[in-house]
Length: 288
Image (tube, rainbow, N blue to C red):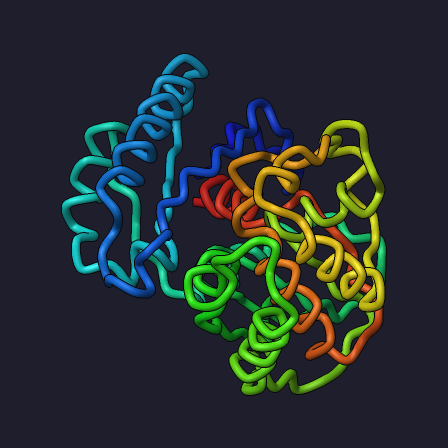
């Protein structure tokens, strides 16, 4: 779950409060088709805190979106009813394509490079690709993400070589249909998988958004991180100084998806950004 409280002036998004809390809402949805009740309870507790933060900040325009886990869940209406009570407004269930467009708007708002751009947004249950210059020209959403791949294949940690190879093949198969109409030299990776991997790659003593934003990861480095993480237990992964312990169970799968996603773009390097769909939502609200 993520929160952004911001002021937007002439297309500039100034962060006032930004939070990320991993609640595991999507765990089990791929297998059971339902949101787990304990995960829902954790999420509602977080959303209630976000609702209070927005009220205290005097937020005048609010929007919440629900993505892959909620899209796929049979009990999504029950969750949304509780989320509405916690937040004071009802989150919208958006399509993967809508999610991709918001990520593109946020990630490309202040890029110091020539277009076109490709934005990759890896979530728990889906991965979005968007190509464009000043607006999306191609976008697609694929049902593969850090939680979904963990639930399907990478439940054991350390992962066996066979499990890891199976997961890599599954990611390659899932992303094989991504067909970017042109090649961009500037590929941007957003959201928790890319930002967490950047922090681990840099061996940061603690997570530092300023060090993560604008950093780069190469495909060979992503492959090294996949191997490194595959050899660790969840507890050892959680002990990495820059790692959010709640992300530790799914970061290996996220790394597998990230490496294959960047390969699909036909480049060797991805630029990591802290700006994402939250910034895109803020820009959209400001334009209304």
